Amino acid sequence: QKEVEQDPGPLSVPEGAIVSLNCTYSNSAFQYFMWYRQYSRKGPELLMYTYSSGNKEDGRFTAQVDKSSKYISLFIRDSQPSDSATYLCALDSNYQLIWGAGTKLIIKP
Amino acid sequence: NAGVTQTPKFQVLKTGQSMTLQCAQDMNHNSMYWYRQDPGMGLRLIYYSASEGTTDKGEVPNGYNVSRLNKREFSLRLESAAPSQTSVYFCASSNGLAGVGTGELFFGEGSRLTVL
Image (tube, rainbow over all chains, first blue to last red; front, side, top):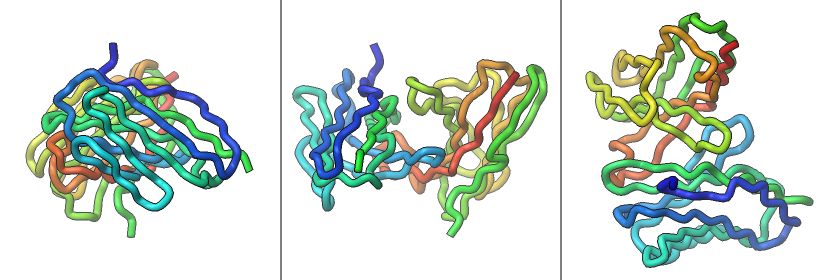
């Protein structure tokens, strides 16, 4: 079993929809939770960063961490075609950084 | 405003050939990394350098060597390329050491390597 599981998609939704992207993990030592966005043929870039449990909001994006369920989510409101990308979760245990495989998201105009 | 620059962007090798991927960052970061990205596998750490003068193995170091030439530059060498090394390689840098709660990695645009 991988330490971090992420559905590869692709996830295809119409413009304006609310998108939910998720990762599950097995190691309770993870303390820092990150979402990176990767456009086609580009390197990943940090989108959001959360410490411990709870929610964090940044514009149309909300990151949610549920440590009791070992489940993290990224919500995108009012999705735009420019949000089409692969979204990778990255989990930091204060010892090592573990990556999800990424979910490919397609927003249809 | 270059950030992390990788060369070459594309390379085709024959089995057994050697090559070096170059990486340079202009953000004065202490730590640098080499990752490979394969479909369905996510990013896997090959080698990293926590600071100038140090290098350490990551998750998948076999078949690779690295050199931290100075604070700016970190190169990855394939001594005898194999088809299993066909991948997209990313160099990244960070101010602190990733994996210890210090946050953001800055990535280059990737080097696409095919080994025939």
